[in-house]
Length: 231
Image (cartoon, rainbow, N blue to C red):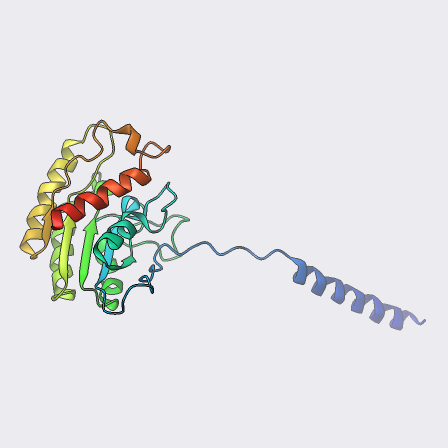
Protein backbone atom coordinates (compact mmCIF):
# COMPACT_ATOMS: atom_id res chain seq x y z
CA UNK A 1 0.00 0.00 0.00
CA UNK A 2 1.42 3.36 -1.01
CA UNK A 3 1.76 6.17 1.49
CA UNK A 4 -0.97 8.10 -0.36
CA UNK A 5 -3.37 5.13 -0.22
CA UNK A 6 -2.58 4.63 3.46
CA UNK A 7 -3.30 8.31 4.19
CA UNK A 8 -6.66 8.12 2.38
CA UNK A 9 -7.59 4.98 4.33
CA UNK A 10 -6.69 6.60 7.67
CA UNK A 11 -8.70 9.69 6.76
CA UNK A 12 -11.74 7.54 5.91
CA UNK A 13 -11.44 5.65 9.21
CA UNK A 14 -11.21 8.91 11.14
CA UNK A 15 -14.30 10.29 9.38
CA UNK A 16 -16.28 7.13 10.18
CA UNK A 17 -15.21 7.34 13.81
CA UNK A 18 -16.34 10.97 13.98
CA UNK A 19 -19.72 10.14 12.46
CA UNK A 20 -20.17 7.26 14.92
CA UNK A 21 -19.28 9.51 17.86
CA UNK A 22 -21.81 12.13 16.73
CA UNK A 23 -24.50 9.47 16.34
CA UNK A 24 -23.87 8.11 19.83
CA UNK A 25 -23.47 11.50 21.56
CA UNK A 26 -26.30 11.96 24.13
CA UNK A 27 -28.87 14.55 23.04
CA UNK A 28 -29.91 17.14 25.65
CA UNK A 29 -33.38 16.66 27.03
CA UNK A 30 -35.59 19.64 26.29
CA UNK A 31 -36.90 21.27 29.43
CA UNK A 32 -40.57 22.23 29.54
CA UNK A 33 -41.31 25.73 28.34
CA UNK A 34 -43.14 27.45 31.23
CA UNK A 35 -44.90 29.70 28.74
CA UNK A 36 -46.43 26.75 26.85
CA UNK A 37 -50.16 26.62 27.42
CA UNK A 38 -51.78 23.59 28.99
CA UNK A 39 -54.58 22.75 26.61
CA UNK A 40 -58.22 22.28 27.63
CA UNK A 41 -59.45 18.84 28.65
CA UNK A 42 -60.66 17.17 25.46
CA UNK A 43 -62.94 14.86 27.45
CA UNK A 44 -65.31 17.73 28.26
CA UNK A 45 -68.14 18.74 25.92
CA UNK A 46 -66.94 21.03 23.13
CA UNK A 47 -69.31 23.74 24.32
CA UNK A 48 -67.95 23.70 27.89
CA UNK A 49 -66.71 27.15 28.99
CA UNK A 50 -63.00 27.75 28.43
CA UNK A 51 -61.30 29.18 31.52
CA UNK A 52 -57.80 30.68 31.25
CA UNK A 53 -55.75 31.06 34.44
CA UNK A 54 -52.98 33.63 34.92
CA UNK A 55 -50.85 33.42 38.06
CA UNK A 56 -47.71 32.18 39.77
CA UNK A 57 -46.42 29.00 41.44
CA UNK A 58 -49.50 28.78 43.68
CA UNK A 59 -51.58 28.52 40.50
CA UNK A 60 -49.12 26.10 38.89
CA UNK A 61 -49.14 23.78 41.92
CA UNK A 62 -45.36 23.84 42.36
CA UNK A 63 -43.95 21.26 44.77
CA UNK A 64 -46.93 18.90 44.56
CA UNK A 65 -48.15 15.98 42.50
CA UNK A 66 -50.36 18.53 40.70
CA UNK A 67 -47.37 20.53 39.46
CA UNK A 68 -48.37 22.07 36.12
CA UNK A 69 -52.13 21.84 36.65
CA UNK A 70 -52.52 23.13 40.21
CA UNK A 71 -55.80 24.22 41.75
CA UNK A 72 -57.23 25.27 38.33
CA UNK A 73 -57.61 21.57 37.44
CA UNK A 74 -59.62 20.97 40.62
CA UNK A 75 -61.72 24.09 40.14
CA UNK A 76 -62.30 23.30 36.48
CA UNK A 77 -63.59 19.85 37.38
CA UNK A 78 -65.94 21.35 39.95
CA UNK A 79 -67.37 23.90 37.53
CA UNK A 80 -67.20 22.03 34.23
CA UNK A 81 -64.61 24.38 32.75
CA UNK A 82 -62.09 23.48 30.05
CA UNK A 83 -58.97 24.80 31.78
CA UNK A 84 -55.98 26.50 30.16
CA UNK A 85 -53.31 27.16 32.80
CA UNK A 86 -50.94 29.94 31.70
CA UNK A 87 -49.45 30.48 35.17
CA UNK A 88 -45.65 30.75 35.48
CA UNK A 89 -43.79 30.26 38.78
CA UNK A 90 -42.03 33.34 40.10
CA UNK A 91 -44.03 35.89 38.11
CA UNK A 92 -46.43 38.61 39.16
CA UNK A 93 -48.07 41.87 38.15
CA UNK A 94 -44.67 43.58 37.94
CA UNK A 95 -42.40 40.53 38.07
CA UNK A 96 -40.96 38.49 35.20
CA UNK A 97 -38.20 35.91 35.23
CA UNK A 98 -35.02 35.55 33.23
CA UNK A 99 -33.45 32.48 34.84
CA UNK A 100 -32.86 28.95 33.60
CA UNK A 101 -36.47 27.92 34.08
CA UNK A 102 -37.53 30.27 31.31
CA UNK A 103 -37.03 30.39 27.52
CA UNK A 104 -34.16 32.56 26.20
CA UNK A 105 -36.47 35.57 26.06
CA UNK A 106 -37.42 35.08 29.71
CA UNK A 107 -40.83 34.77 31.35
CA UNK A 108 -43.08 37.79 31.21
CA UNK A 109 -45.09 39.48 33.93
CA UNK A 110 -48.87 38.99 33.81
CA UNK A 111 -49.57 41.67 31.22
CA UNK A 112 -47.39 39.80 28.74
CA UNK A 113 -49.65 36.75 29.00
CA UNK A 114 -52.77 38.54 27.78
CA UNK A 115 -52.18 37.96 24.07
CA UNK A 116 -51.84 34.22 24.73
CA UNK A 117 -54.94 34.32 26.92
CA UNK A 118 -56.97 36.12 24.25
CA UNK A 119 -55.86 33.61 21.61
CA UNK A 120 -57.77 30.91 23.50
CA UNK A 121 -60.99 32.96 23.22
CA UNK A 122 -61.87 32.26 26.87
CA UNK A 123 -65.28 32.54 28.44
CA UNK A 124 -63.65 33.04 31.84
CA UNK A 125 -60.28 34.48 32.90
CA UNK A 126 -59.07 33.82 36.45
CA UNK A 127 -56.17 35.87 37.83
CA UNK A 128 -54.59 34.68 41.06
CA UNK A 129 -51.20 35.87 42.26
CA UNK A 130 -49.14 38.79 43.50
CA UNK A 131 -46.99 37.42 46.31
CA UNK A 132 -43.84 37.75 44.14
CA UNK A 133 -44.38 41.50 43.68
CA UNK A 134 -43.87 42.76 47.23
CA UNK A 135 -40.32 44.04 46.73
CA UNK A 136 -40.99 45.59 43.32
CA UNK A 137 -40.91 49.27 42.49
CA UNK A 138 -43.66 50.73 40.30
CA UNK A 139 -46.06 48.00 41.43
CA UNK A 140 -49.16 50.17 41.44
CA UNK A 141 -48.74 51.35 37.81
CA UNK A 142 -48.20 47.71 36.79
CA UNK A 143 -51.42 46.57 38.45
CA UNK A 144 -53.37 49.50 36.96
CA UNK A 145 -51.99 48.83 33.47
CA UNK A 146 -52.67 45.08 33.71
CA UNK A 147 -56.36 45.41 34.50
CA UNK A 148 -56.94 48.10 31.91
CA UNK A 149 -55.27 45.93 29.28
CA UNK A 150 -57.08 42.81 30.50
CA UNK A 151 -60.48 44.37 29.96
CA UNK A 152 -59.43 45.91 26.65
CA UNK A 153 -58.12 42.65 25.19
CA UNK A 154 -60.92 40.48 26.60
CA UNK A 155 -63.99 42.73 26.61
CA UNK A 156 -66.54 39.90 26.68
CA UNK A 157 -64.87 37.46 29.08
CA UNK A 158 -66.01 36.91 32.64
CA UNK A 159 -63.14 38.14 34.81
CA UNK A 160 -62.50 36.54 38.19
CA UNK A 161 -59.70 37.83 40.43
CA UNK A 162 -58.60 36.35 43.74
CA UNK A 163 -56.85 38.20 46.51
CA UNK A 164 -53.09 37.51 46.57
CA UNK A 165 -52.36 34.50 48.77
CA UNK A 166 -49.74 33.94 51.46
CA UNK A 167 -48.38 30.87 53.23
CA UNK A 168 -48.78 29.82 56.88
CA UNK A 169 -46.46 32.55 58.20
CA UNK A 170 -47.83 35.94 59.32
CA UNK A 171 -49.17 37.91 56.36
CA UNK A 172 -46.96 40.97 55.71
CA UNK A 173 -48.57 44.42 55.64
CA UNK A 174 -47.27 44.93 52.10
CA UNK A 175 -49.43 42.02 50.92
CA UNK A 176 -52.47 43.46 52.70
CA UNK A 177 -51.90 46.73 50.83
CA UNK A 178 -51.47 44.84 47.54
CA UNK A 179 -54.81 43.11 48.15
CA UNK A 180 -56.50 46.50 48.43
CA UNK A 181 -54.85 47.70 45.24
CA UNK A 182 -55.81 44.56 43.29
CA UNK A 183 -59.39 44.75 44.57
CA UNK A 184 -59.68 48.39 43.49
CA UNK A 185 -58.35 47.86 39.98
CA UNK A 186 -60.08 44.53 39.41
CA UNK A 187 -63.41 46.03 40.41
CA UNK A 188 -62.81 49.04 38.14
CA UNK A 189 -62.26 46.59 35.27
CA UNK A 190 -65.58 44.90 35.96
CA UNK A 191 -64.05 41.77 37.47
CA UNK A 192 -65.45 39.67 40.30
CA UNK A 193 -63.00 40.12 43.17
CA UNK A 194 -62.86 37.13 45.54
CA UNK A 195 -61.34 37.76 48.95
CA UNK A 196 -59.88 34.37 49.87
CA UNK A 197 -58.50 35.68 53.16
CA UNK A 198 -55.55 34.05 54.90
CA UNK A 199 -56.37 30.47 53.95
CA UNK A 200 -53.15 29.01 55.34
CA UNK A 201 -52.58 31.13 58.44
CA UNK A 202 -51.60 28.80 61.25
CA UNK A 203 -52.07 25.77 58.95
CA UNK A 204 -48.61 24.29 58.30
CA UNK A 205 -50.40 21.00 57.57
CA UNK A 206 -51.58 22.57 54.28
CA UNK A 207 -48.08 23.59 53.17
CA UNK A 208 -45.77 21.35 51.09
CA UNK A 209 -42.39 20.14 52.45
CA UNK A 210 -40.69 23.11 50.77
CA UNK A 211 -42.32 25.26 53.49
CA UNK A 212 -43.62 27.70 50.89
CA UNK A 213 -46.27 26.28 48.56
CA UNK A 214 -49.66 24.73 49.34
CA UNK A 215 -49.73 20.94 49.23
CA UNK A 216 -52.46 18.97 47.43
CA UNK A 217 -54.91 19.54 50.27
CA UNK A 218 -54.07 23.23 50.29
CA UNK A 219 -54.67 23.49 46.54
CA UNK A 220 -58.01 21.73 46.99
CA UNK A 221 -58.90 24.32 49.64
CA UNK A 222 -58.14 27.18 47.23
CA UNK A 223 -60.38 25.61 44.58
CA UNK A 224 -63.17 24.96 47.08
CA UNK A 225 -63.10 28.53 48.42
CA UNK A 226 -63.19 30.04 44.90
CA UNK A 227 -66.01 27.70 43.92
CA UNK A 228 -67.94 28.67 47.04
CA UNK A 229 -67.49 32.41 46.47
CA UNK A 230 -68.50 32.15 42.81
CA UNK A 231 -71.80 30.60 43.90
